[in-house]
Length: 398
Image (tube, rainbow, N blue to C red):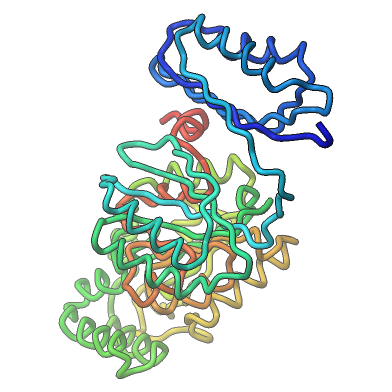
């Protein structure tokens, strides 16, 4: 042979023997081959072995086939040997990982997904399962010759989300994907399961009035700052003691405790940033031993709310500013930052992070975020970090 040649070896079948892998590699020791790639799966006595071998100039393909066939027959396994074309393997310039979460995985979903990726000139190079609880979780590695338009692709993939109830995240396939160091989360309807201002309005007997202003703000008929001032004005007279009792009974989003524990174990800095109120955020920060907490400050006099906010209002823009300032302070790169929120005023914060996750959010935010999560458990976002169920259970033992 004038040059080295590559071969693809596939071995599969059913066996109860535990030494299959070493028997195949043992036979290669005495032949002039080098193993360039190897994938092995052993599931319930069914195994699949995929190897890419480089055949040296002095090596003999026929000898390779004969030796491997002997081992395959011994274990009653199927062996196939394919020569690979001798063309340079180009290193893709743009590599991505698409993480897919779904309770069901019908073939139609995968067909539409793979077809769409192909039409977008995204080449699928690897599909691997990620061990998960009552979920199908797959990491799909793709590459492209040029950068993809992420927002457009997410918008299109969300059509599958609505049809098949799946969650997904699109990230760069690089060192930082599993090396995040900072996460900031919204409070209301993200870290906790309620809108605190709605609950406070019940204490003031102004539930209907507050809800009306909220609707105007959501429809874009009134700015967030003005809507918040108007709603807070309606809270005048609420006793601090009643507010404190309300805070003590906050319902937290399922999975929060496990999420915080695991991320802190991994060395993350964790913060809450909210358009809500410091009385609530300070309690959450202390309850979960978080590193940062930011919110608006209510004025209190004589043990009652005055209906006014002290200082500047923390709005969507400020959320993004705070996230970037904390990352800079902690010497953390933007590629190592995660942000999670549910509302339109979380957009700048999510856009400031390399992994922005829209959690049970409206479509406007979901199609602009790197990840979309509609499961009730907040700790499901750990799958977007490539962390499996087994790894989670190894760290967190309630």
